[in-house]
Image (cartoon, rainbow, N blue to C red; front, side):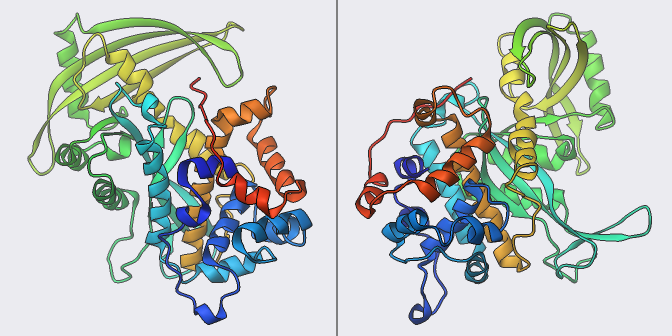
Length: 444
């Protein structure tokens, strides 16, 4: 963790340099960088809650020596101290830490080999629930009426994650979905949040060549126009019930374009480590006309894929996909665009939300009841996931553990035990953050 973060972003003071400290300097015991580092360490080591800081990091000799060497204080702050310290921070400044972390990886060309067609960075956007309550948590809560008559109060977020074929899913920007305007007739929602997020994303990364990966919720004229205005590419899942006129136009076009079909066969190792034989049949059409509700005409491309998979046990399954896109489609690129682009949308679910929810990261745990501190904890979780993924796929880990650690949980455990038990002098700790390392990443 120490080498991984320093080689990309420098020392922790540099990483968090843009976050201003609103506290009275005469009453400060813990530097702000030490509070932000501890919150990040909480998630990197997967402690599961603020209480984990007290139970596993505080009152531990080697741990306190390391902390003192870096931050000049004898004790690691209590979890409640983190909560109090985060309550007055500016959320946008902590968000900028996450944005700048990914931007640094891009500028240092760490992610260049994972670009689509050697040009486009894949950014998947999707929403997910974070907190759910039976009683109103705060004025910004969204509400939902259940079938049994009960009302639940919840806080979702919309995430933009930069995803890659080897398994990276880095949060590049977050939009919190909440009722900020309490006088509004309608609640905030994922679509409204998408337009806000897209505007922020374009402003923050104006020249980044982006290809959006979206689900069927975003299939419509506003999204098509937005991507045209921002010069973004996109793949949008087209469900059978969405845009019926576009389905009909595609069926007519395909009947007249018999040469725009392609068959592909390949092998792939699935999540059960079984090799699957995959057959894919592609059909595609371009320049399909679609008129939206504002009478704007859009020229769209559409890819259809019929896929069958057979594993070594003889079990088979058939899958059908359709994607809307603004890429130019040819016989030479259609399968590459689908397999190395459109198909990676699911990584925001798997490498992103599922891992963060169904592990000791505890994304759905209320790390704070305060609305500001809650968001700061959420963003530090995203930063910790970036650091953790870089370690998990990096060559330094492979050198240290040639036989692999098998699971991310084992890596988190090893990191925690090293922090708690590895005895280093202050000079050795300072040398770690200033060392020179070469790191390569697994591309499988």
